[in-house]
Image (spheres, rainbow, N blue to C red):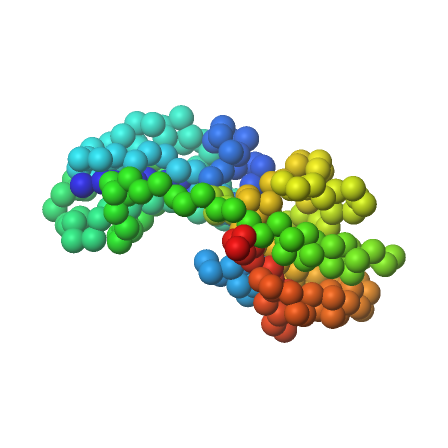
Length: 262
């Protein structure tokens, strides 16, 4: 069977940067304390994250027994013993998630001594069930975005955010990336090209239109002291993009999901 594993670190005191410096690689999925909270479907939940969380994907093993997967994790993560102690000492959690196919039994297949070794390392083991089939090897479809629709929404976003005062919160979800990034409105008149946004894009470098999955502007800003000015810009955005393709407006958010070209 195919088994995947991932390391999950959560804390109200430590930050994502702390986790990444300790573990080494960049997190494959993360959020920070105070970030806007979203559902798996990309809906704004009307609240902010109360902690920081990072997930590091470890490996995917085909034809691998659960016991072998756990032994590999126990060996490979041994160097992080002090990190796990620091996370737990700060009131956080350090978890090893093992995902296995539906129908595979865990009972009786994992020696208790091995689970005790992982616990001594400072890890809680969480077993999950996968209903997908990673062995099918299907390649993702190539997405060709409707450039005109993206540019129209981005122009509305720039126009709404152009007035003086607090800037709109702009949350961007990139295709094939599980995390949501809190960035800001492009503010260069020459930002648009035929293929994407010039550097700095949303603030972290150039952005290809085809990489954008959705853009969300929450109705509530992170800084509540600036609420009146923020709401004025939010209302302006609603007025500018209410009839645009790909735009959904609710009391919690304005969301643009990239649509394919005709």
